[in-house]
Image (cartoon, rainbow, N blue to C red; front, side, top):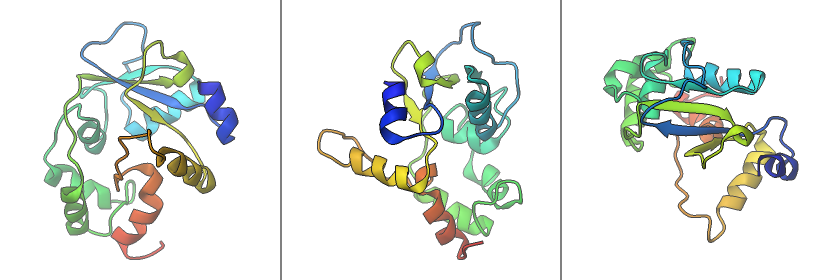
Length: 172
C-alpha cells in the first residue's frame, strides 16, 4: 500500500510507520540518541528502521508523547518555549494547551520507526510528510464514513500550522 499511497497523494517521501513494542529485536538500530524529529528525518533520509526507548530518545516531549515515559508536563513544557523547540509563546500557554490535550498512554517500552514498505506487520501509526494541499486531501479522505475513529488532536503536525499561531498569538 505504501507505493499506492505515494502515487495517489503525490507524496515526495514514502510514509513512515511506527510500532510500539514490548521488546525489540537486534535487526533495528537502537544505539543512536535522537529526538523524535531527528529519528523521523533519519528514517526518511537513510530508508532505515530504528527503535527508540526512554534510554535513547533524547527529548522529554518525545518520550512523553510517545508514551515511552510519562513525564510531568511541568517538566517539559518550558522546553517548548525555547529557541530550539518554540511551539508556545510562554510556559503558561504551553501548560494551558497541553493540559487540554489527550494524555498519552504507555503502549510499550520501544517505538520502532521505519519506511512503511519495510513493515511486515500492521503499524500502530503512519506518518505522512505532506504539503498543505495534500494534508487537506487526507483530512477529507479520513472524514468519510467508515474511516473512524478520527480524532482531532491539536498537537499533531497536520494542525500545528494553525495551533502554533493561536498559541503564540502571532504569525512569527
